[in-house]
Length: 228
Ligand SMILES: N[C@@H](CCC(=O)N[C@@H](CS)C(=O)NCC(=O)O)C(=O)O
Image (cartoon, rainbow, N blue to C red):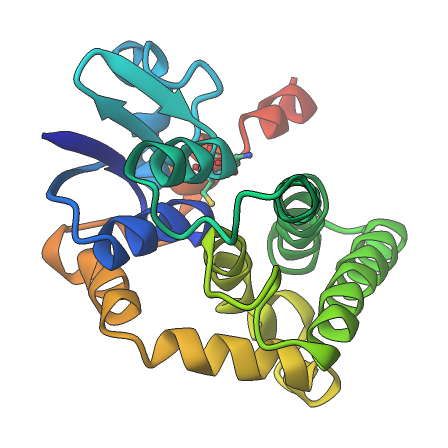
């Protein structure tokens, strides 16, 4: 059975959403990143980047959420938006846009707004600006279409959903006022039973919730260099 190495965070949730949508049996292996389990050698043999999600399909390992989405969609021939070169080009372009833009800029915006020590005005300004810029591009793209690519709900929408869920934490409580089309897609996916099952995984495992000194050290090991 497929094993999904999971923490209830934006990137792993995209993959859980796919597995739930496609009705594929899978076992959740909790990787509690606040406890530092992403750095354990057994997990790093599956994902050398020490981050969730990762997936084991028999003796095949796949890591990085968007790579996993492509792997699963191709394997099961589900939730691909189409197979013409034009649609495939759109699919790959938007998936990489999420992987290299939305994810990293949102992640850094969260880091600097909520967790970094002062002074941080320069970094907050840069990452907030870039996170907004990326979401406005998606919002504009969704103005004329229901889904990210072609006319069907696909892995690209799932990838967007992972991060759209946390927009208020990334950009501020009122952010959806400026991103109505993103909100429409988010609401549509949130209403799907698969999304609710993916969100419920966190209630079935005892993930650490405190962002205490240990959690900060496990998530931001670079900080140690500042204390030397
Ligand atoms: N590019 C990776 C990023 C993975 C990532 O940053 N995962 C986060 C959860 S959303 C994580 O495991 N963080 C723990 C850490 O950075 O130590 C992907 O898309 O899977």
